[in-house]
Amino acid sequence: MNVVGASVSEAFYAAHETRDIVLPNQTNHVSQIAVDIGGSLAKIIYFTLSADRKGGRLHFKKFETEKVEDWLDFIVELFRDAQHLAAHSTQQVLKATGGGAHLFYDQLAERLPHVLIQKEDEMECLITGLSFFITEIPYEAFTYSELDTDPIRFEEKSKDVYPYMLVNIGSGVSILKVTGPGPQDFSRISGTSLGGGTLWGLLSLLTDASSFDDMLEISKTGDNKNVDLLVGDIYGQDYSKLGLKSSRIASSFGKVFKKGARQDKNSFMSGDIAKSLLFMVSNNIGQIAYLNAQQHGIKRIYFGGCFIRGHPITMNSLSYAIRFWSNGDMKALFLRHEGHLGATGAFLKHNPVRKARHSFSCSENYNAVDISTNASSVYEVLDNANLEIRSGNHI
Image (cartoon, rainbow, N blue to C red; front, side, top):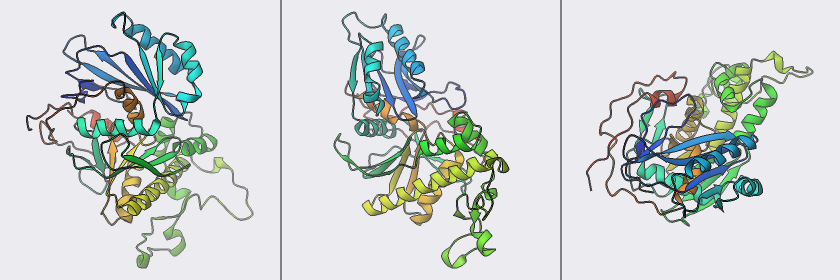
């Protein structure tokens, strides 16, 4: 793949859709499609040539893993459409990663008898994908803080990123330490079973939301104070000696239990439950991430996976945890293509990537974006910004 001049597409996309990556210098058809099949979601990436201009685009799609026929049909149709573009002798390839690459291998082979299916290591693909996004794509990585006038601040492209930590939040959570650009320059240092699958499962039991996006949506209107026990509920004020504000959560779901009384979930609003659970899972992940970063002397922490989805509450919870416990010494970083790191890494493993020799400047062709701290979706604001910038000519 030729990724020289790569940028994020300016085209309009529906809510929760991931923007394409424009590759103006990739002028040849590619034979591979990649899929990252996780415990909750199957993420697919593929390339198409543009009909009206030079180059083409990388497209990103996701399906619920349990809807096997849906994402299998989609992959089969992609290969069928690509047949007339490829040379007759070209072998079509499916790069598969994630646990589902093993679990669903037989089904993939049955539905794709003429396609070469290659399984790729999940962790290697995550790091390869992350490296691509943070070194080749402008306006990809950013910080988030509701305390700032402009909550979103994009990171400038830099080669000085090592060491860093990737906290990949899928159904569960894996924490990787990355010390260099090589394929073996990483190790899995920790993780937790309390991840996106935990939130999804509990919200399925406790609310009527039918999808993860629905669950995030109802959390926007909720008030966790109706469910969580706060420091102020115990002390009646801040606990200043320990630096704990009265609004800090002392016990998640602490107000639900009442001695001698059997509680009915219908006594609590779905939005309140959703926000409480979102805080509980996010705060737990944030603290585990901080403790690992502290132990390994790491300052930069990237958060990836389909758990975040540009949700302000989630990002602010993770950012706050890292900033609070490190006294501002560590940085929580988020990604616009956070959920597609593994699929992208698998896709790029098919052929060596031709990288740009020049750098990108985050100040080029950029107009400041007015972002409200009460924005319902950070990505909605990002998607309304003109972010398909041109590369600089700096060597």
